[in-house]
Image (cartoon, rainbow over all chains, first blue to last red; front, side, top):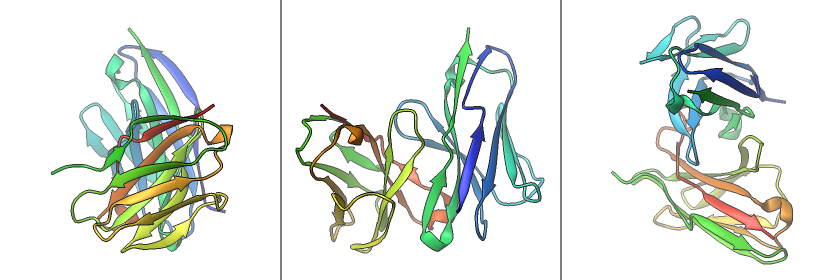
Length: 111
Length: 113
């Protein structure tokens, strides 16, 4: 069965810390790995990763994919209170034309 | 360009009632996806509509149903509401197919009492 597993489930850090969120996957005919940020309601798109070893960056956020070990990490450096959110990892299951999501990591940044 | 719009934003219903949630995709997107996000749980795939047809459904009972209209907007209907149906219902649309991800609406928060 296709699945996406995230760890940790929750994380509390102080402002300015660096955090690493983990995502492992088992997806038949893997195509891409997606990261979303969900603050209140609508998840917003962060990254799409398709190639192993190539880092995607956006400001203080970066992500990398390891297709051999079937995992991805999301790094956030110099965290700010605005980074507090649930971070979702997901992967499309093309045969079913849907995206499956992990349970998310709830990140809380303390001032 | 308007994003994915959902209505209503919040809803309170009594157990046993029926509810209809609405979604309008981004202009030009023909596929609409529905997800349920119960408190503390991840997003669970409910339904996929494309070109007016139901293309796939997740592991939900038949009392969860829906439809897609000629203008590609969609409705999600839930009959015989149960307490555990309380959740955030998210609609998403996609232009290039699931491999490139979705754009989500802001969701409808349903509370069943």
